[in-house]
Image (cartoon, rainbow, N blue to C red; front, side):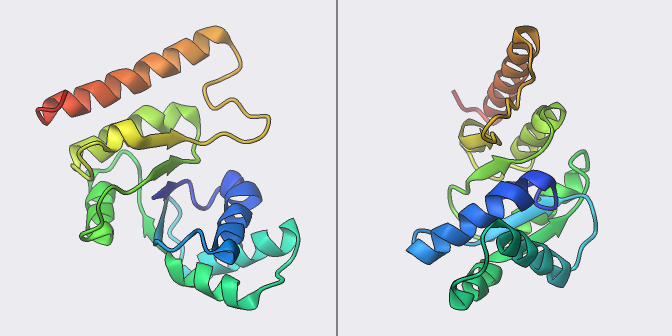
Length: 167
């Protein structure tokens, strides 16, 4: 799952990386994008195509078509349990999904709690990844904000795990 799929980080860095992974044969699993704007699949596919075109061009149309076939979209507010219920439905019988947070750090805790509350994956809170660009620090620029974010994320993950009887 790619939280923040309609945002700048996905457009500038993640879509070109996914395209490269498809071209090399490394990406063979579905990618479920999650974001608040209500977009059609066609609009998301247009954004992905634009991203790849801008990042270096499309040199393998077959790989692009394959990438687009792997990408689906769930629209919703990260604070709404219905969003995570829709994600659970979209995941179907998938096991051990990866969670990538290409969202503002202020939403990390909310999303992690939503993942846990929907019981999307037993260990999902431990497997969540924070989006990090080349020069971006997802936790903030000060030591205090980094510590605060780390504590909140660990606390949310621990609470989620404990609520389900985990360790």
